Image 1 (cartoon, rainbow, N blue to C red):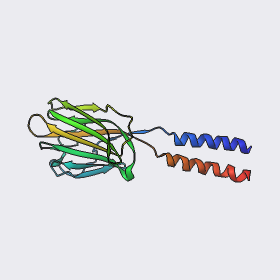
Image 2: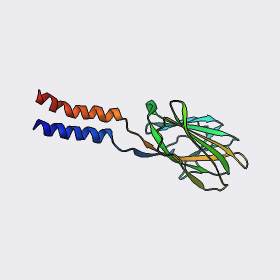
Image 3: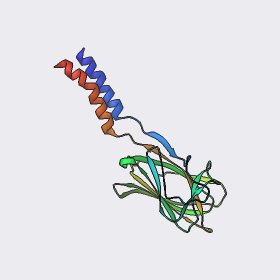
Image 4: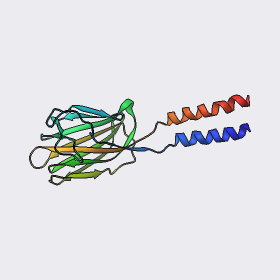
Length: 185
C-alpha cells in the first residue's frame, strides 16, 4: 500500500513541477487617471509596466480596447517586469496610432536574450506584433518605439506566458510525499 501512495505522490510531483505556462495579457484595464495624465508605472496581476524613456501619458481615447498608454515623443520606451523577478515568455504587443520603428528586447539577469525589430504603418487602428521568440525565459521586456511621421504612438495589450516556479511544484510534491514517507518508517 505504501508503494501505491509513493507512486501517486511521485506522479503529483512530476505534474506540479511540469505545470504548463499561464497565458496573461497586460491590458491597462484599470489604469488610473484621466486622458493626458502623466504615466510612470502601473502594476496589475503581479507585473509592472514602467516608463523608461520619453514622456508617457494615460490614453483614455485610444486603446484596443481603451485605455492604453502613449508617448507624444520622438523616442519612448517601457519595461515589463514581474514581481520578484518572476519568469515569463513574451508573446505579443499592440502598437497603434502612428507609423513607427520598434525594438523589443527580452532580458534575463540583465542580459539580452533576444531582440526583435520592425516597423508599423500609420493608422488609427492597432497592430498586433507577435513575438519572434516566444520560448525564451525572461525577467524583463524592453519595448522602444520611434515614430516615422511626427511624434506619438500607443502601446496596449502586452501578452506573455507566466512560467511557474519549479520550486513551488517540488515543495508541494514533497508535502504530498511526506505522509507516505512517515508511514513507511
